[in-house]
Amino acid sequence: MSIFEHFRKEEHAFIEQALEWKAAVEHTYDQKLTDFLDPREQDILASVVGKDEIVYLSFWGGSENCERKRALLYPFYENIHEEDFDMTLYDIHYPSKFVKISHRDVLGSLMGLGLERRKFGDILEYEGNYQFVTAKEIAPFVEMNLQQIGKGPVTLSERSFHNILPVEEEWVYETTTVTSFRIDALIAKMYNISRSKANAYIEKKLVKVNWKTTDQASSLLQQGDYVSVRGLGRTIIREVEGQTKKGRWRIVYGTKGSR
Image (cartoon, rainbow, N blue to C red; front, top):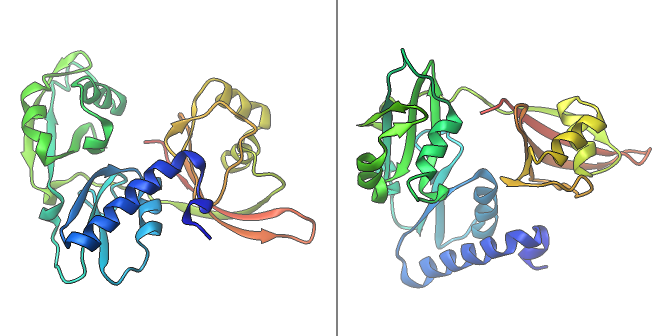
């Protein structure tokens, strides 16, 4: 059975890329450091590499609870360290007495620099303080050009990862049964809202599956899928345990607060 059969068609391009990374390390015995990957991409890459005897795989995003992480593929005989992931952590200084900023403001300003999202890790907030993680290769450019977020001027200062802000949210898992894997039915179940309200979120393009916006209420979810609804947080279909005697599907899903 091909590994492609376990994933969606739109994920096949990333699987091919992951296979190329693994093959390169096998043939050259050089390390391969990726850009920042979202959790779904991390799961796929881990499936591709598997428990390989030659190629080892590690992820790091600044702390264990960070969501977006760089992956490092490396030969089995090498010892790696956090510094090998080539990341920079910045504090954001802004006039908090006069302006307010949000996670969305920070992300929008970073994207406004003309850089891709994959060059940035998590944006962290704690008690009004903000930090973000970036790939070290673009850090000087970001530091020089990021001068405003929202309506306020900002300055950046590099920090040690020992000073990274806490990421407090953790997955909370529950088991339930469903009659269908349609996205509207599962959103209604996992977020405890009506089916019509779930459809309204989908129609307004406020729902993402594996970090991609969807407006198809009839699309089917599968094990390993991440779902987010704007303002309601994130869920994951962690496991499909099988069918009950009444023909319903028993699933384990996790929930996480809005970020």
